[in-house]
Amino acid sequence: MAHYDLEEQEQIDTLKTWWKMYGNLVTGVVMAASLGVVGWQGWHWYQGGQSAQAAAVYGVLEQAAGVGDAQKVKAAAGELAEKFGRTAYASLGAMVAAKQSFDAGDLKTAKTQLAWVAENGKNEIRDLARLRLAAVQLDEQAYDEALKQLESSHAAAFDIRFLELKGDVLTAQGKKADARAAYKSALDKSADKPSAGRELLQQKLDSLGEAA
Image 1 (cartoon, rainbow, N blue to C red):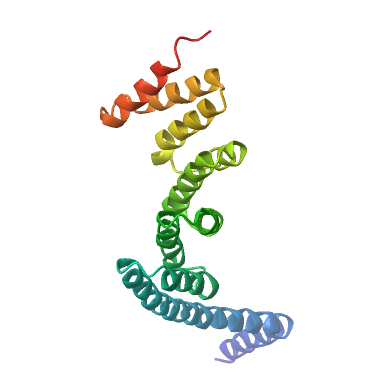
Image 2: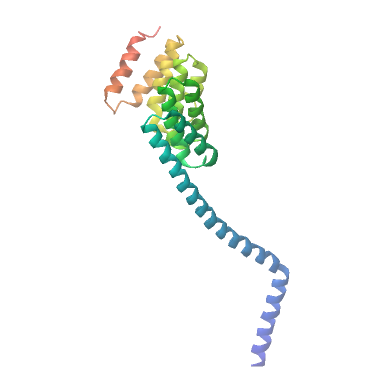
């Protein structure tokens, strides 16, 4: 029994020594972990609140777009970008506003809204914004700017559309060989996807004539 008590006391002393050496570190780690959990829960609560508020503003934007209230659409899109820029609603709102501006002939505002999504949007909506922005720049003969958008990284699902529009820009620049290569790449990628779009691609390629 005495042997047991001695052994137990040694373990206690060892634990005390270890705690004296590393106790502050352990306490700090535990507190940091606890704060991390609370912070994570708080962040998700905050994000949920942000999304709910953003959804409400986006609903106002959609209603305004439905009745053609351009000013209200623009204001709601601006509020989403300013206050809820990290939510998907901000990008969606900017896209709706860009279409509204484009239809109204306000290309300057449309480009600004599309550029915002191209810079701040995520995944597919960002790629779609880049395509639409490049198309507007093509109409304005801003060819270098359009090519810059089209040469950016994007999801593989958009490869064909990016290549086709790149071919359109290069054709407008008179760079037939480069345009032909872009159209050919787009056709190759759409080989297993027969559609009217593929037929149009072939027509564009044929219109450039044979390679010199």
